[in-house]
Amino acid sequence: MNQFIEWISQPWPWYVAGPMIGLTVPALLILGNKTFGISSSLRHVCAACVPAGIPFFTYDWKKEIWNLLFVLGTAIGGFIAMNFLANPETIVISEATQADLTALGITNFTDLMPVEIFNWDSLFTGKGILFFLIGGFLVGFGTRYAGGCTSGHAIMGISSLQWPSLVATIFFMIGGFLMTHVLLEPLMKLVGF
Amino acid sequence: MDPMADTHCVAPNSSQTQDKGLALLKYVIIGIVFGIVFVKAEIISWFRIQEMFRLQSFHMYGVIGSAIVTGIISIQLIKRLNIKSIHGETINIPTKVFKKGQVIGGFIFGLGWAITGACPGPLFAQIGSGYTVILVTLVAALAGTWVYGKFENQLPN
Image (cartoon, rainbow over all chains, first blue to last red):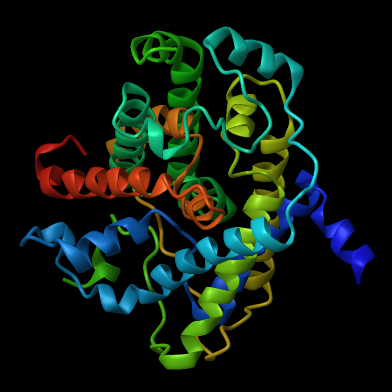
């Protein structure tokens, strides 16, 4: 048992993680005739909490409660993995990425997230505004405008061979490349890096 | 409004059988497995997303690529073998209609993805793993979703 825990605590390679994520697609289809997608959960929360008479949020969200339970499970899974299956070693980040990020002012590479950004002390600073508020807003607005995120389009959509999802995925990547290579440096300077 | 008739809803519900009570637990369990994979393969890591967009590691491309291949094979098997859901329903995969939103919205999401280092799935897994400040990112994402819904009709689509 101890050996099993030790083995499972190593970081999982892509060829284990990818197929497991891919199997979510048939699991949801067969167990409930449900289409895989995560960003819809954000819409359902809006519909449940602040519909404000907006037609986009006026529908029977209770029929979609499975989607909210799925993301609740995702959070519980994160808790289980971090508390019972955590990797005792520090994360191994590519040296090239470390060099690029060091140039941007990131100094701590020991955790899954750069702790100098993702902590509560950043909240009311420029860092918090950029990384939590602006970043989060763009994710929520963009996914809904696009009609899906990495799961709904890149995985579910492309898996069912739907070209609009391929287009969406290409533009996810274009946005990400532009932010990483062009906009991130000036934005980080602006917030004090 | 019937969400099934709504093309904006990317996770529409084709099920005619409404799961109730304990039957709903299966979605929590699938979510738990999904969340564990996200943490264990370090998909929730901001650094991994930076590596991906800087083309300095194959990891995330391998994850997404092999997930898609698995998805394609699964869906082809379901279609060709005419596999039914456990409730005996014919499995339905709604058609995605092309709209400008996939280009403009997709691009906007990409900008955000490279900042937060997380698409919506990992956001939930990050919160569960103890990065509680990501709750703020989640609230901001909810605000973004709400603002989209509010101005949906004024945006090019």
